[in-house]
Image 1 (cartoon, rainbow, N blue to C red):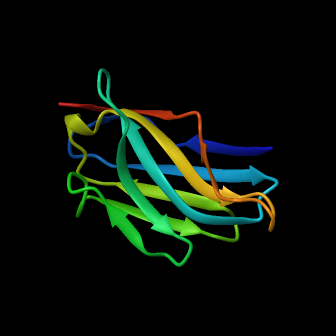
Image 2: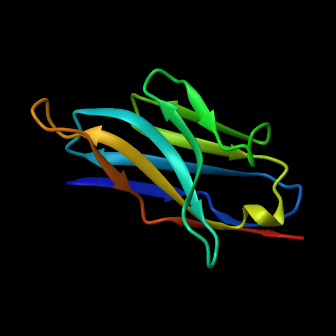
Length: 121
């Protein structure tokens, strides 16, 4: 059983900052990519940022230069530092991990339950 637990969401004014955290636990052999996605009301879930096991980040154009993704492999955790927040950053933020639970299984996607981020204007 694999679990991803997010924390750090909340309400912030435009221009403010928040830091999201996500920790994976359970029967995990190796985590390949971890990332953050978000879903605004009435919209589809979209990629925010991902990071490989080697630490290579990838950002959506809408958050580049404002958000920073980082990862602690020993803690099986991923973080998202969000600066200069805008009202359009509002949504539910989901943690994602592409992992395998044993040497003989393939990679599968796992998701956290989501954490709400609300940016007021």
